[in-house]
Amino acid sequence: MKKTIFLLSLILIFQSCSSDENPKTDDNNSTFHFPSWLLGNWKDETKVIGFKLTTDDIVVLQAGTIELSLKSQIEAIKKSNGTADIIENNTDSSYEAKILLNGGQQTVNYKFVKISSNKIVWKSEVIDTELTKQ
Image (cartoon, rainbow, N blue to C red; front, top):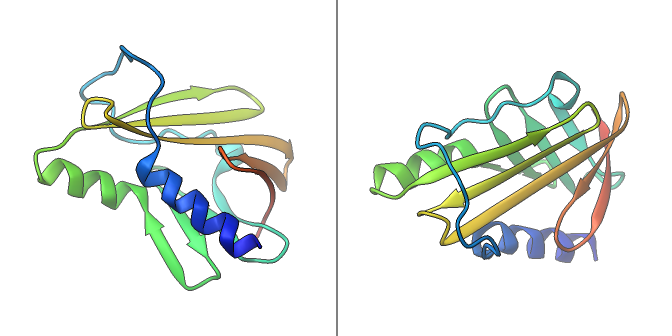
């Protein structure tokens, strides 16, 4: 069940459509700026779903063997003359990134909410998943 949910989440990553008609972006805003409490490796209780959050990348982890770097994907899109802009909303207890691809034709959303220093909730469009810092 968790694998199915994770796979659906990956599909949403690449095929989500924006509901914003005129999002405002900065052409140079193509890197992540995470709060310090969010940095590190985070996994669900089954270790099937996880994230590695560095100072400038979201790496999606699956079953400890597959790593999908959003920074690498954004760079690949730009190399093929596409665009990618990141709009961030950061508070003391939550972080949200909206990645607008090719002028907002597609969007990818990530939202993390802090529960404690070693627990967060990843709020995907499909399900909320509690993650523990590794």
